[in-house]
Amino acid sequence: MTLKISVIGTGYLGATHAAAMAELGYSVVGVEVDAGRLASLQRGKLPFYEPGLEEVMVSNIEAGRLRFTNDAAQAAAWADVQFLCVGTPQQKGLQSADLSFAFAAIDALAAHIKPGALVVGKSTVPVGTTRVLEQRFLAAQPHRTDVKFAWNPEFLREGFALEDTLHPDRVVIGINDAESEALLRSVYAPMITEGIPFIVTDIATAELVKVAANSFLATKISFINAMAEVCEAAGGDVTTLAEALGHDVRIGNKFLHAGVGFGGGCLPKDIRAFAARAEEIGAGKAVAFLGEVDQINLRRRDRILALARVLLNDDDLTGRRITVLGASFKPDSDDIRDSPSLAVAVLAHEAGAIVTVHDPKAILNAQRVHPELGYEHSLEDAVRGAEILLHLTEWREYRSADPADLFNLVALPNIIDGRNVLDHGQWSQAGWDMLAPGRTLPLRVPVG
Ligand code: UDX
Image 1: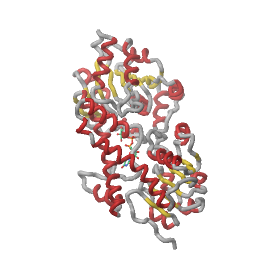
Image 2: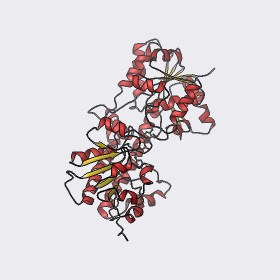
Image 3: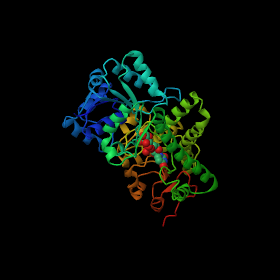
Image 4: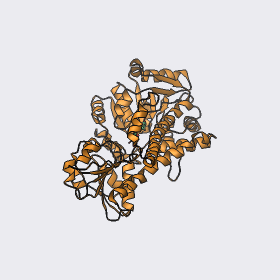
């Protein structure tokens, strides 16, 4: 009999998980409370940009394996496994995670949940959340000890969401009982057969793996950005430093790209929530360094404007025409949550500059949150008349742009490569003055 799966919350994580579970052949219902998002999913339209995901979602809807509803009670009564994929954003004005969506999901399921069902959390949560959710459930349904709880963190990267979900580096499950382990082994059987490491552990460890992984990644990025600061002071080149470090296989070259720093819906909020939770459980000192990781990261944004002032040879940005290339927090995504590029655009605007933002996918999202900035949909229109370009999200379109063509459009040929990925020689040859974080060398090759 086909396993029945519900996915509560169909944002980035949930929509991807629902499509992936259907792709594995299960019968899946996605539960969504947001009417606009639900209508879009029901029409087979992804409400966000993620390469390849919409096609897989549509083919599974057409095959009858995947549907979307707002009827949590019906889904609760139907599914054998209920995956919790709701958002856990940063609480307004606080560092800690907001669990209200998880609580609402449990409340919606509680009265209707199928006998013997397994509730599996996938959202990123503070350690101890599973117990809190289970207690909340039992407070509402004191006799339903047949319902079990497990935690199964998700490690997907935006831009690679489907691939990361169907072929992850590892599957981690935190369980309290052998029955739940057996059920999750059957859910993930295709991955176990593929040889993907399957780690079974207690629930606290499973909850911690995700925040620990994201803290490590954030720390690695901030480490190299700290080295960028030192390089700037010492006259070194952080890209060569990173390359040299990366050859040591114990260090590795991944997540060692210095630039404007990390953003997105996960890394920034996860390190803050982790630090807040560690404080609550008496382990605050152990992860106090995450505060420093955050600060290093945020300093990079100011650094971009400092470099812009150097190139423009002007401390006052009032009235200067600045074009920001990229609004999403990383390429191949229209996600602008905690986007470093947009944050720099806002800082430049606040400093009095006339800011124009370009992005291949994220303009509508950016416009909604920051209507005060100027936007252009074509790269040519965005750079026309600019006195400086700030390259802050490394979309392929920017790397493949011809610097000689852009040279003819701008008022002044200045560019900051905030991601350290452009071919500096090529831009310099085309007449551009370029600066990049972590590289204090002038990067100016005389023309001719
Ligand atoms: C991250 C984790 O990678 C993923 O495992 C987790 O499930 C969710 O959080 P994501 O937010 O999609 O995924 O983006 P990621 O690719 O990790 O990049 C995060 C940020 O770090 C981006 O802003 C990116 O530009 C930046 N970054 C990444 C750097 O600045 N330097 C690097 O070397 C790598």
